[in-house]
Length: 358
Image (cartoon, rainbow, N blue to C red; front, side, top):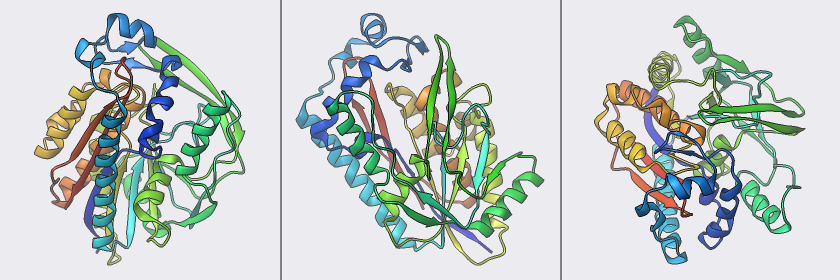
C-alpha cells in the first residue's frame, strides 16, 4: 500500500526568484495594482486610498531598506533549502503538488473547483517574452518568468495514481475535473469579484505549460532528476465557485484516504504551493493559520474568515488541504519559517511561509 512520508508547504512568490536588490523596484507596480484587498476594511481599495485611510502606522513605518530585504531573502532561501533537503532525504516515489491556477489553464469558459492532471507527462513551457510596460518592467518580468521555467521540458506524472485518486474522489462525492494533455494555447477572461472589486481581466491566447505554482516546486525543490508528480488544482481565487476552508479540509482528508488505498508500494510526498497572504500582507491571518496548523486544529482551519481570503491570499487554502492530508497520515508540523515582507508603505508584499510535516 502507498504511504505518505512527508509534507511540505511553501510560498512561490516572485520575491523568491528575484534577488533582494530588486524587491523595491519590483514593488513599484503595487501602486497601480487594482486587486489589492486590505484586511482592515476587508475590501479592495486603491493603493493611495489605503495608505490614507486603512493602513496602520506600524505598517507604514516597517523597515524596507536593502539590508532588511537581504536578511529576509536569506532566511527564505535557507528555508527553501531545508525543504529541498527534507524532500531528497525521504526519496519519494511520487510528489503530489496542491496549488491553484491563475490565468493559466482555467478561465471563465471552464473554471473547475478541483482538477487533477493525470496524463503521462506535463510540459514546462517558458512564458512568452513580456511586451507590456517599460523596458525595465519587461526585464523584471522576464527574470520572474525564467524563474518559473526558462527551458521547455516534459515532467513525468504519476498517471496511474492520478486515475486512482480521481476515481476515489468521485466515489466519495467530490466532483473533481480531470486533464490528460495540454492544449496548444490557453487564454480568456477571468474575474476577481470581491467587495469593492468586480475586475474582469483578459489574457491573450499563448502556449501554457505547467502553471507557476507547480513549476516553482519542480524548479526549486525537485531539480532535474526527480520522481513523477501529480498536480492537483484548487480554485482558490475566483468566485463564485472558489473553494471554502471546510471543503478544502474535507478534500484533503479524502485525498489522503485515496493515496492510502493505492495498492502500489510507493512512498508519497505531498506539497502545498502558494501563500501565505499577498498581495497585501495580513500577518494576523497568517499567524492564525500557522497556529491552527501547529495544533492540527480542524475547527480553526475550517473556520478561517473567508472575508480575509480574497485575491492571492486565498492560496492559504492550499495549506488547509495539506493539513488534512497530514492529519490523516499522522505527520506533525515542525517549527515553520514565517517571513512577512512589507515592501511598501501600504503593506503590500508577501507573508512568506515554509513548513515541513514529518
